[in-house]
Length: 367
Image (tube, rainbow, N blue to C red; front, side, top):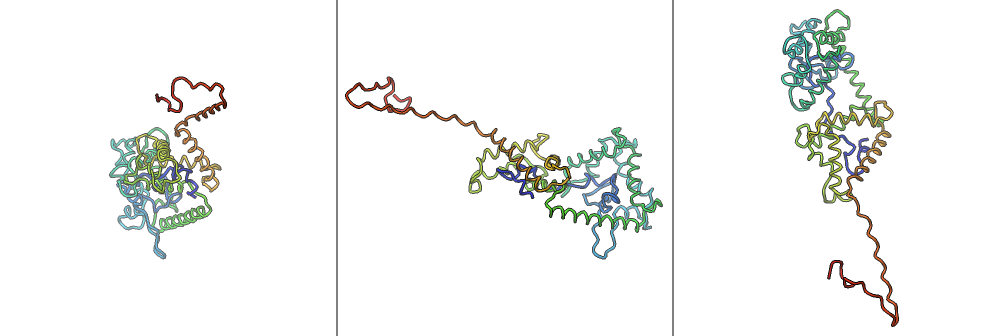
């Protein structure tokens, strides 16, 4: 389907371009505002809230056939005595360690500046597949707004603990204030089954030619990675200019002039570079992809079909043509046709006078 997004002049005018969209939070530390039992599988819960690692830290891998269902790493880290259970008090204490580390002035409240430290070492570190620190900060800021339930610009300890208790309740299915291995294994198993169903549904949508927003963002970000030649997570003007295609050679045959193609590419670059720093980072790519998805999704069913892609291509083609009109140099007006030569009368009569000044037949300006 992405072939439908190719513009009339060169690839990627419609594309916002770009790397794999990260579906995980900016960091893997406290708090878990989406309990795995209901929305995210326990396999995706963080390994250690105090010092989170990469996006898969603490994840319980899918079990091999006939293998026991794996437990999240946090269960083993809390159950150091190997009792096979975790109490509510121990769970809350474990989850709140990151809160306590972020609370620099120990007033049992987190300001947005304190909370944003969760995007930096030691809470989050750079590495392969990890979003850049600025993207992690942006996600942390969005998470802060979700956690600040009373909208006072602070995350109080009570707000944080309420979310941790809510998460524990998802695991404690018999409401005895402790989570046992059998309870947790059953929850993990059900979550893995839901994941499998989700993957099957996603594959079915792809077969039907429909695309969800996460798939659309992934497609765009993968395109951006191809442009990011130095692998710094950003696309510079020079890297983006590659979309203009070759300046000459066989591959340039039949294309508009290179300078025109380059101007179109730079106009698109300026549209994507919202902070005007001369680079397009993953936050800008993702934001543009989301905006583009909403525009293409005409029936607002949260999926894109082939007809919507075709209409999006028509709209983009019209925009490119309009842009070409503004970039093309003004054409000079048509030259007037030369006056027909007067026929010379035959016979001995008077001959027409030659105009005074320039000699007949000489170019203008020649004496």
